Amino acid sequence: MTVHVVDDDKSIRSSLTWALQSTGLQVCAHETPQEFLDRYEPALPACLILDLRLNEADGVNFLRELRTTRDMQLPVIIVTGTADVPKVIQCMKLRAMDFFEKPVAPAALSEVVQRGLAMDQKRLEKEKQERDIAHRFASLTPRDHEVMPLICSGLSTKQIALQLHRSVKTIKNHRSRLMKKVGANNAAHLVHLSAMHSQLSPQKPA
Image (spheres, rainbow, N blue to C red):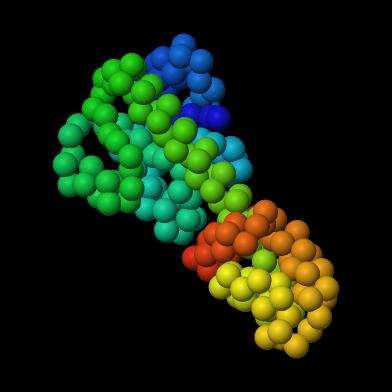
Protein backbone atom coordinates (compact mmCIF):
# COMPACT_ATOMS: atom_id res chain seq x y z
CA MET A 1 0.00 0.00 0.00
CA THR A 2 1.33 3.42 -0.96
CA VAL A 3 0.27 6.96 -0.14
CA HIS A 4 1.09 9.32 -3.01
CA VAL A 5 1.52 13.02 -2.23
CA VAL A 6 1.41 15.56 -5.07
CA ASP A 7 2.37 19.06 -3.95
CA ASP A 8 4.75 21.54 -5.58
CA ASP A 9 5.74 23.00 -2.19
CA LYS A 10 8.79 21.07 -1.02
CA SER A 11 8.25 21.90 2.64
CA ILE A 12 4.66 20.65 2.51
CA ARG A 13 5.72 17.46 0.73
CA SER A 14 8.37 16.85 3.36
CA SER A 15 6.09 17.50 6.32
CA LEU A 16 3.29 15.31 4.95
CA THR A 17 5.74 12.55 4.10
CA TRP A 18 7.29 12.62 7.58
CA ALA A 19 3.90 12.72 9.33
CA LEU A 20 2.52 9.76 7.37
CA GLN A 21 5.71 7.71 7.53
CA SER A 22 5.74 8.15 11.30
CA THR A 23 2.47 6.16 11.41
CA GLY A 24 4.04 3.30 9.44
CA LEU A 25 2.70 4.22 6.00
CA GLN A 26 4.71 3.95 2.80
CA VAL A 27 4.79 7.37 1.15
CA CYS A 28 5.82 8.43 -2.35
CA ALA A 29 6.07 12.23 -2.79
CA HIS A 30 5.85 13.99 -6.16
CA GLU A 31 6.38 17.58 -7.20
CA THR A 32 4.16 17.32 -10.29
CA PRO A 33 1.17 15.27 -11.44
CA GLN A 34 3.30 13.75 -14.20
CA GLU A 35 5.76 12.38 -11.61
CA PHE A 36 2.83 10.69 -9.91
CA LEU A 37 1.57 9.21 -13.18
CA ASP A 38 5.04 7.89 -13.98
CA ARG A 39 5.35 6.08 -10.64
CA TYR A 40 1.78 5.00 -9.86
CA GLU A 41 1.20 1.23 -10.00
CA PRO A 42 -2.51 0.53 -10.68
CA ALA A 43 -2.33 -3.05 -9.39
CA LEU A 44 -1.31 -1.95 -5.87
CA PRO A 45 -3.61 -0.37 -3.24
CA ALA A 46 -2.98 3.37 -3.03
CA CYS A 47 -4.33 6.72 -1.95
CA LEU A 48 -3.54 10.13 -3.46
CA ILE A 49 -3.14 13.36 -1.50
CA LEU A 50 -3.49 16.12 -4.09
CA ASP A 51 -2.78 19.83 -3.69
CA LEU A 52 -5.62 21.90 -5.13
CA ARG A 53 -3.31 24.61 -6.50
CA LEU A 54 -0.22 23.51 -8.41
CA ASN A 55 2.21 25.63 -10.41
CA GLU A 56 2.03 23.44 -13.50
CA ALA A 57 -1.53 22.14 -13.21
CA ASP A 58 -4.88 22.83 -11.61
CA GLY A 59 -5.82 20.19 -9.05
CA VAL A 60 -9.43 20.03 -10.22
CA ASN A 61 -8.43 19.53 -13.86
CA PHE A 62 -5.93 16.83 -12.91
CA LEU A 63 -8.53 15.01 -10.81
CA ARG A 64 -10.96 15.25 -13.74
CA GLU A 65 -8.29 13.76 -16.00
CA LEU A 66 -7.76 10.88 -13.57
CA ARG A 67 -11.47 10.09 -13.34
CA THR A 68 -12.45 10.54 -17.00
CA THR A 69 -9.56 10.34 -19.45
CA ARG A 70 -7.57 7.78 -17.45
CA ASP A 71 -10.46 6.11 -15.59
CA MET A 72 -8.40 5.90 -12.38
CA GLN A 73 -10.56 5.18 -9.36
CA LEU A 74 -8.08 5.37 -6.48
CA PRO A 75 -9.20 7.44 -3.45
CA VAL A 76 -8.13 11.11 -3.64
CA ILE A 77 -7.79 13.50 -0.70
CA ILE A 78 -7.59 17.21 -1.52
CA VAL A 79 -5.42 19.64 0.43
CA THR A 80 -5.66 23.40 -0.11
CA GLY A 81 -4.16 26.55 1.33
CA THR A 82 -7.38 28.49 0.84
CA ALA A 83 -10.97 27.31 1.14
CA ASP A 84 -11.95 27.66 -2.52
CA VAL A 85 -15.51 26.39 -2.08
CA PRO A 86 -16.48 26.12 -5.80
CA LYS A 87 -13.35 24.08 -6.54
CA VAL A 88 -13.82 21.89 -3.50
CA ILE A 89 -17.39 21.18 -4.68
CA GLN A 90 -16.06 20.26 -8.13
CA CYS A 91 -13.61 17.86 -6.51
CA MET A 92 -16.35 16.24 -4.47
CA LYS A 93 -18.39 15.73 -7.64
CA LEU A 94 -15.31 14.01 -9.05
CA ARG A 95 -15.44 11.67 -6.04
CA ALA A 96 -12.68 13.15 -3.89
CA MET A 97 -13.13 11.38 -0.57
CA ASP A 98 -12.22 14.35 1.68
CA PHE A 99 -10.39 17.67 1.79
CA PHE A 100 -8.14 19.47 4.29
CA GLU A 101 -7.00 23.05 4.66
CA LYS A 102 -3.31 23.68 5.25
CA PRO A 103 -1.72 23.32 7.72
CA VAL A 104 -3.02 19.76 7.81
CA ALA A 105 -3.60 17.99 11.13
CA PRO A 106 -1.50 14.80 10.76
CA ALA A 107 -3.70 12.58 12.95
CA ALA A 108 -6.89 13.49 11.09
CA LEU A 109 -5.21 13.08 7.71
CA SER A 110 -3.73 9.70 8.66
CA GLU A 111 -7.16 8.42 9.69
CA VAL A 112 -8.67 9.36 6.31
CA VAL A 113 -5.66 7.95 4.45
CA GLN A 114 -6.01 4.60 6.24
CA ARG A 115 -9.65 4.51 5.26
CA GLY A 116 -8.76 5.36 1.67
CA LEU A 117 -6.16 2.59 1.46
CA ALA A 118 -8.66 0.06 2.83
CA MET A 119 -11.23 1.22 0.26
CA ASP A 120 -8.75 0.86 -2.59
CA GLN A 121 -7.72 -2.61 -1.48
CA LYS A 122 -11.36 -3.70 -1.48
CA ARG A 123 -11.86 -2.11 -4.91
CA LEU A 124 -8.90 -3.99 -6.37
CA GLU A 125 -10.04 -7.27 -4.81
CA LYS A 126 -13.53 -6.77 -6.26
CA GLU A 127 -12.12 -5.98 -9.72
CA LYS A 128 -9.94 -9.09 -9.58
CA GLN A 129 -12.92 -11.21 -8.58
CA GLU A 130 -14.94 -9.77 -11.48
CA ARG A 131 -12.11 -10.48 -13.95
CA ASP A 132 -11.86 -14.05 -12.65
CA ILE A 133 -15.60 -14.60 -13.03
CA ALA A 134 -15.60 -13.10 -16.53
CA HIS A 135 -12.69 -15.36 -17.51
CA ARG A 136 -14.45 -18.47 -16.18
CA PHE A 137 -17.73 -17.72 -17.95
CA ALA A 138 -15.91 -16.88 -21.17
CA SER A 139 -14.70 -20.51 -21.26
CA LEU A 140 -18.24 -21.92 -21.36
CA THR A 141 -19.42 -23.77 -24.46
CA PRO A 142 -22.83 -23.48 -26.15
CA ARG A 143 -23.78 -26.73 -24.41
CA ASP A 144 -22.80 -25.19 -21.06
CA HIS A 145 -25.07 -22.22 -21.76
CA GLU A 146 -27.86 -24.64 -22.60
CA VAL A 147 -27.54 -26.58 -19.35
CA MET A 148 -26.67 -23.76 -16.94
CA PRO A 149 -30.08 -21.97 -16.91
CA LEU A 150 -31.79 -25.26 -16.21
CA ILE A 151 -29.52 -25.93 -13.24
CA CYS A 152 -30.08 -22.38 -11.99
CA SER A 153 -33.86 -22.83 -12.28
CA GLY A 154 -33.66 -25.67 -9.74
CA LEU A 155 -34.26 -28.63 -12.02
CA SER A 156 -32.74 -31.94 -10.99
CA THR A 157 -30.28 -33.83 -13.16
CA LYS A 158 -33.04 -36.24 -14.19
CA GLN A 159 -35.41 -33.42 -15.10
CA ILE A 160 -32.73 -31.72 -17.20
CA ALA A 161 -31.95 -35.00 -18.96
CA LEU A 162 -35.63 -35.45 -19.85
CA GLN A 163 -35.97 -31.88 -21.09
CA LEU A 164 -32.84 -32.06 -23.28
CA HIS A 165 -33.46 -35.65 -24.36
CA ARG A 166 -30.12 -36.89 -23.05
CA SER A 167 -29.11 -39.57 -20.60
CA VAL A 168 -28.91 -38.84 -16.89
CA LYS A 169 -25.25 -39.87 -16.93
CA THR A 170 -24.46 -37.40 -19.73
CA ILE A 171 -26.13 -34.53 -17.89
CA LYS A 172 -24.51 -35.53 -14.61
CA ASN A 173 -21.03 -35.44 -16.19
CA HIS A 174 -21.74 -32.21 -17.99
CA ARG A 175 -23.10 -30.60 -14.83
CA SER A 176 -19.95 -31.61 -12.95
CA ARG A 177 -17.67 -30.12 -15.63
CA LEU A 178 -19.72 -26.92 -15.76
CA MET A 179 -19.53 -26.45 -11.99
CA LYS A 180 -15.77 -26.96 -12.08
CA LYS A 181 -15.32 -24.44 -14.92
CA VAL A 182 -17.07 -21.62 -13.09
CA GLY A 183 -15.86 -22.60 -9.61
CA ALA A 184 -19.33 -23.27 -8.21
CA ASN A 185 -19.73 -25.49 -5.15
CA ASN A 186 -23.41 -26.20 -5.72
CA ALA A 187 -26.45 -24.97 -7.64
CA ALA A 188 -27.06 -22.04 -5.28
CA HIS A 189 -23.45 -20.92 -5.73
CA LEU A 190 -23.84 -21.21 -9.51
CA VAL A 191 -26.91 -18.96 -9.35
CA HIS A 192 -24.91 -16.40 -7.36
CA LEU A 193 -21.95 -16.45 -9.78
CA SER A 194 -24.25 -16.25 -12.78
CA ALA A 195 -26.00 -13.21 -11.31
CA MET A 196 -22.66 -11.51 -10.63
CA HIS A 197 -21.51 -12.20 -14.19
CA SER A 198 -24.69 -10.79 -15.70
CA GLN A 199 -24.16 -7.54 -13.79
CA LEU A 200 -20.60 -7.01 -14.96
CA SER A 201 -19.86 -4.29 -17.48
CA PRO A 202 -17.68 -5.20 -20.50
CA GLN A 203 -14.31 -6.20 -19.13
CA LYS A 204 -11.18 -4.20 -19.80
CA PRO A 205 -7.83 -5.84 -20.35
CA ALA A 206 -6.13 -6.61 -17.02
